[in-house]
Image (cartoon, rainbow over all chains, first blue to last red; front, side):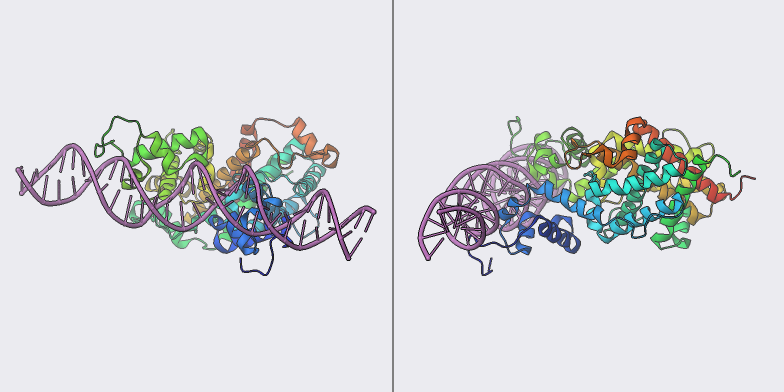
Length: 213
Length: 213
DNA sequence: GACGGTATTCTTACGGCGTAAGGCACGTCA
DNA sequence: TGACGTGCCTTACGCCGTAAGAATACCGTC
């Protein structure tokens, strides 16, 4: 530490500042780089200092996830049909995840039920119930949508992560349809997401109102 | 090592045996327990010995994922409508993931395009194209389904993982619909999966054949 | 202004991790 | 018989998370 601070002099650390530094480190160098020592170094401080603001590494990762989901609220106010509401929700969540791709695997090990998160869910449930869904069905819909978005984003990120060394299909003749599809398909991952999201929402609608009158 | 083996005596290690031991360790004690030393100990061997069969930790984790997806093939032969085919695929994948819950987070960081995996995908694509889907659309469907299953399973596992210490909704009055839904909803995770899967498949069908004739 | 308590920071240290480098014994084949 | 490759072990290095404790600045009280 080459800072001009003496032994007991405050460095002005807060839980928020630590989580922010951790987030930035993860975004810049990936999850394995997120160590107590590296975060502390980025803040001009020794590793053990962090423990006065955060109980341990697990709590730190929890906090990072918490910060991530806090950024996943739709900017538009809840209006329009329940489909539009859900579509906004899905887009907001997807955008938040894609903005911090290295953090996405963290969500697979951690539950993210913060108060703010529950507020957004309650909003969605209200919209759905007003549209005639029963509360349990509405919860099914919201949970399903959340898992769907997470899965789509994860698959997208994992597909283009490393330089394809493991499998790297060697024989186009063995899987002709696959190769044709890859060759002629839309290369934008957005299109696939929109397609699948539309299908899921259409499916919810179909299950909700059995016939189109 | 208190085994009765002398210095240069073979222990009969193979890549398969190592991966199996790693899988069993992960199932029994979770992912953090999967270390080179622990795996080696389980096999009655020193850690460095593993490096004669596996290049390193990353390759080991890749191998574990490979083993997992290899178990994700449907047992039934591909028959029936494309919806039934996809449903079988989804159930097989979900069953494989649920059988090794601790490995699911690994899939978030690793792509799993083995030859065997591509075979299953090619099968699905063939069925879909025979039903009138274009190859790119069929690929969209299969990818979307895969991501969907992964997301659903991950969410299910994460929801019931630890003892709910982080959020643990403190005020039922603040989120009345959420609590009513939890109280009166179906507690079986299977039901939610079936509901969402049906919705997604229905959505695919709706996008495929615009009108129900 | 002096003073005591508290909050914040740093130092040191331990065990575990992945793995690089090199040594030793066995099986095989010339 | 002897040389050699293969499979295994030993040692060692630099990371990691974090427990224990010493040192110092800050702050409310007088």
